Length: 491
Image (cartoon, rainbow, N blue to C red; front, top):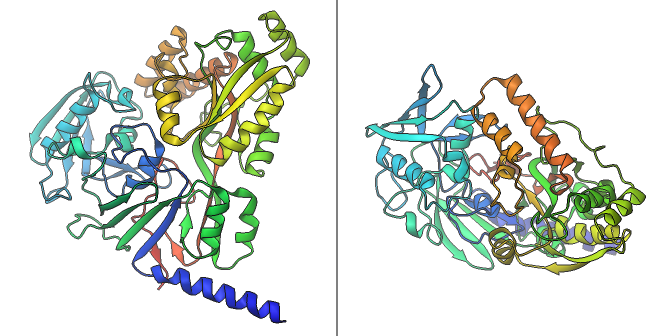
């Protein structure tokens, strides 16, 4: 009885502690700290997890159902041939530093994103644009070379947010947008603080302050939540402890879907991975369910190619390379590696990578592939793996929506160069008929699976844990980001 009373007292104390943020403040945990805060100049999803829809806005935005909604553009018209878009812009909007927003800022942002020297991580989505024309301070026209079925969706991604020429160069450390929250402070290694923008033109938000705290260690994340030091984790890094939170009435646990294809990314130009037979051998060894169960405690959906299973164009290719150790050994022997070989596996901080890497290493050891596991921090991963392509294998989750087109870029960090695939994606990009787009997307999936470009593991689940008194948190992640515009505390 005494122990029960102490337990109850502890719960009450934790509840009181967590209530200090009620009504005006949200303390949200994130696994990864962004390398900087400019979504137009970096590939890290961690950037958008802080700033998307909160600090920066685009012409359009993506809602929690994956649908395109107006944002800085209130409405638009499309020419009959699908190659000219005319947008009407919100009026009276200002950037957080007080500078005005108008069509010139839109032209600057889009021309900057598609420029030859652009550092935009998704520069390809702007390639179809042939002209950006200012029609009036509140009207802009965008012309594209060919019809694009996903053009409005792409304009709603974090890479396409509108920035001002006055502040564009300093957005990495002092981001200035037009959104409902403005940047206050970045305590590097710890947290980013945003506050409500009193001059925001749009629907009012409920929160006055949002604090994003970076905790990559699963145990530390669990302790911070149970102690009331955080109000939530949009994607909780310790899936093995979700039962604890499910049994605690203070919390809501919501398991949804993400766009995150979790893969054993492969350097297709590095020996011996430039040999298809070696990649096929690895594909024959991977036990996806064992990785999902061991690393993610059952949360995740097996995939056989780089495509989200919840997408209507998805095709099930899990049986392309069934687990077959004898066939894998034979393929290695054919490639000249009968005795196996040694390689490195660089692992960024997320749970799926660190734990998944240990399981994968054990699986590949069964056919003589000996992996050296190298743990790296996120900034180092971005520099070594993504930018410099200095790696053999790595594990990472690609959370961009409908991003199969990255394989058409031979300079992307996979270094996969297939002209037939590139031509197929070029056609897919200009086709608007849904049935034809579906066929092309499925053909693209098959090519990647058959070429075993990467080891396709699972679709990352979104395991959200947050205070039961919160509403407005997204259960799914159709785009990378934590949209706080509708988040509020119960009255």
